[in-house]
Length: 304
View 1 (cartoon, rainbow, N blue to C red):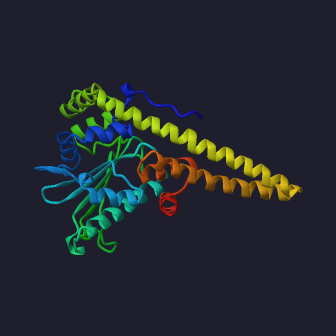
View 2 (view 1 turned 120 degrees about the vertical axis):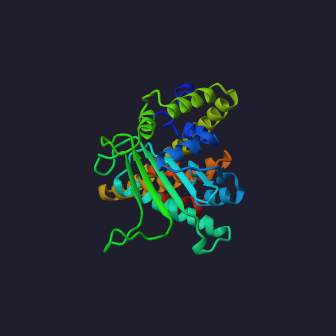
View 3 (view 1 turned 60 degrees about the horizontal axis):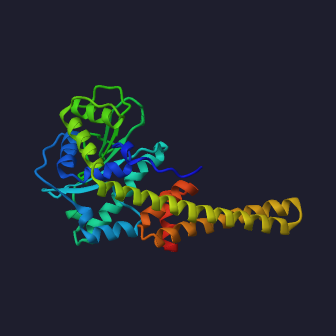
């Protein structure tokens, strides 16, 4: 299937590029967090601007959509999870993110008992779990007495646009409807929608988006297609050398395995040539070769 670039004018908050861009506006990001978590935040700062943290995340093959800290040093990570995963994959992803965040916080010199409180929030435009709720909040508790919470400071929140219960405030429901493409008269929705419209008028941002997408298309066309074609040739060559049907089958299997290895290495080489981050290679391996997050990160780190 040919790689197509979604027109800049058609981007919505569901699109990864636009979500990150509009959430880089402090007032928008702050209001969203306050509404979802029903809290008041005096100020936030963007942790990805700190080079040591950026470098650490790139080395692990991760780039978080929204990664901020408030005035009390509580850390918030918000992800727009458009691709529907199995429940196991969906709920193990924030577990992995939590571990990486903790590693980075410790790397700055914090002691274990000084680890920041954290919120990891996934916004999902699809039904999850019982397919009833709009919001699912998870904390660690004692199995023997569920009224006893483990005071580890970690909270994970999943928002679903497809819930049907009356379990969120009207403004959060309006926000989730907006993620699904429904524009209401809600004040925050109107502000958010206007911000996206304003962003689309900025020529510099449009050029940045097109440059990024063209690099993605170039990476796919040059890296993936060449790798697959080379792999097919290797598979045919090795398969024909076997002579017998069983030998041919084994040869083709080996050829396909080698093709996948070479194709994945081509992806990494292309990402490096384009001066893109490791996490771009990781996401491409997951998407094109169906690797798990851990396997993709390990392969990229070994071959980078």
